[in-house]
Image (cartoon, rainbow, N blue to C red):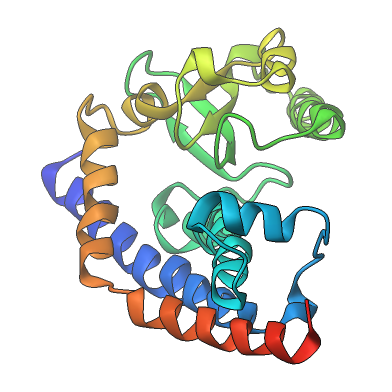
Length: 234
């Protein structure tokens, strides 16, 4: 990868984070202003409010409901759901036209041509995904064989955006018994040939995040949910 190609990916990554992740994060946070968007556990909500913030006032109950969603599950889910857009918007030069394969590239480490399914993180697949992922690779290899071409199992890989090998779930490790699963810095090194690219990509996201101050939105959303809690007598 040339310095120009590296910079292009980093620039596109910033645009992706700014226009996809952050926009969706703000939209999903604003939705948390009413109780109907929560499955409230009446045994726990006031306890968690008092535990975290000192009392069970409507405002603190609202915080105990909103913070885990806005700062945890919501943004994590959004990031995972945006994977296909990342492939289309950022990794356009590697995009695959093969069913079930996200990108194709020549491995910068071993020089072999790779067929890759991309996943967000080291814990993001379930047991049912194992068969789906391996079936895609089997179908690819069978099609290649029909066309007189051989694709080795080690050239069908799962690339995980972040994490390390030791972070991979048991589901990923099951896939890794047949098809390599490469995570985090190692994956980006194979893709770009730059051992520092993973850190540069994280820093690119951080630079965009610094542009954003969501504190006013959080305060407004907490206030609206607190009012809804008062009105509904939670």
